[in-house]
Picture 1 (tube, rainbow, N blue to C red):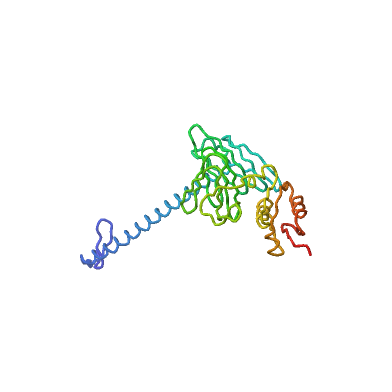
Picture 2 (picture 1 turned 30 degrees about the vertical axis):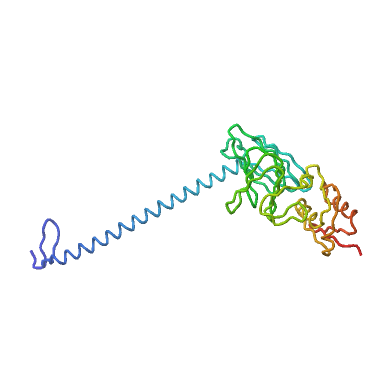
Length: 291
């Protein structure tokens, strides 16, 4: 053997021996590196597992959304139209101009019958043997019923309801539940069809329900009503903006039963009953006082 090295079992070792302390330090350093490598592998596996779970969850959500898209139905009543729709559970909805309704095709089989509405419609909700609730979602509150009749108007600024039969609960965004009885009216903006009654926080008994329901007969009923309130109804029905030349024009009161099948005919009828000139430019209606 050489002086520099010895051979044992096929391995070459330095002739000079290594101290026990050095071996221990090398072993400790190696263990630290191995443990760090193990932690990195575990972390990578965890990230991969979480990514897989997230992807699976996204697929489930997407599949659910896709399934809902495939099961839902949408009905739209065009501007100037009135449309009747019988829902899969037998409930009847009479839709006013520019109104959209969405619901599930499997409505009778669901634990809760839910529909979404924007515009104005009259509902005749059918009762079910197992008393499944019927919920109408609007932009400002939800209407929860079992079987009843009511008129519902939902716009971007406010939603209102007139209950004609049965009883309903209004489920507000702030968690409040408001109970309504037949003949009462509620609006999310606090307004009321009753003359000079505004900022109401609870349902009020309506004095002239026919004025709210007149659209069912394709009419608008006005009885000593300020023109600004008439304009509000016109804006909701025909999705136009009404502008007044002066406060005197806006506060002018009118009385009459006017047809609402056609906006041009309606405006001409209003013009004939007042001393104002009405000019429509696309979706803007200008009402000016005659010189």
